Image 1 (cartoon, rainbow, N blue to C red):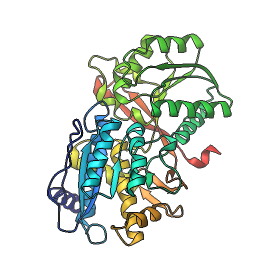
Image 2: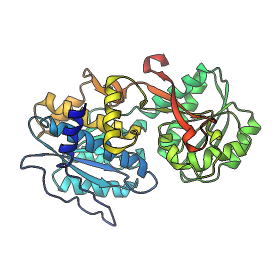
Image 3: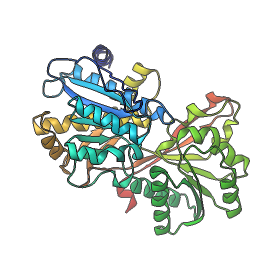
Image 4: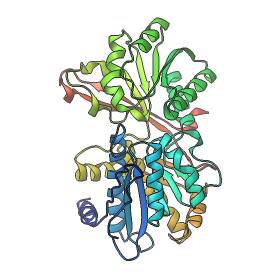
Length: 405
């Protein structure tokens, strides 16, 4: 492992990171090539803005994986040149970044992080013949059959069903939901969860919403949950709202049941307000793409290398970005070329191919979406340790796609 890490660090110092800040019409990616005959791969994600934690994790995971691939000889004997662009989680900025990369000759793009931003460029990818692989755009309609768009994450309908299956396993029969109706990710997941609950005989006794994903006041919504007498609330928001507002306000409103979220909860620990009673995070769980404490060799080696490089545990967005690159490498090698996106697209569309990634072993369905399970993770607070140091996460269980039958 030490030799592997040294190789990663050496190659990483040679890897290009070309940041486009995306003002107005968006700045073009710039920088010198890593070699005379490189494979250009674009990376688009929210490096700044409300979802910066996701985007920066994507960047770190991609850089580390590119460095490892290059150190091992590249793809088909050619080095990868990584071009990065910041879309700030905004659809227009994502389109600007996409156009700039196409102008630079990029034929393969990893991104974006959110469903809203990614949806803005799927049609463009198909028109330009650019292979697009999103690490974490979970909206069901992101991928469709016979096109250039793929992903390394599961889709909302599967994640919602997995959440409902776990609720059923706990013997919970009465739940509530809170979502942002204007957001594809939030509404898509809640709608999927609601449908799955109804199919499993679980009553959705209260449904509330907010106008934006940036909501900072959830008091009324959780008061409604208390009045409805629900045992669990499925609330789909991102880490910054969850840690600072949603969970503390839920407890202040008198809701002492289970709060359940999804992959957007990843990173919550970094956004909890100073002075918060950390015990309020007990009985808060979420579904996620993988468990960083998994002892399997693939996960353990990845987490060890990531921690050695960045000094922190990788969020799922880092692991998913790395899996995107793994998928792209395998498809290029199967196609025998990196210069024909159509051939690489066809290789990716082969549903018989099995991928062994950090976030699981999976095949793609006919639309280009992985068929795989999820980890259910809970926040834990150790009062004997106290303070933020006493707050952590642990795996509750894993639920596979086969478990949903």
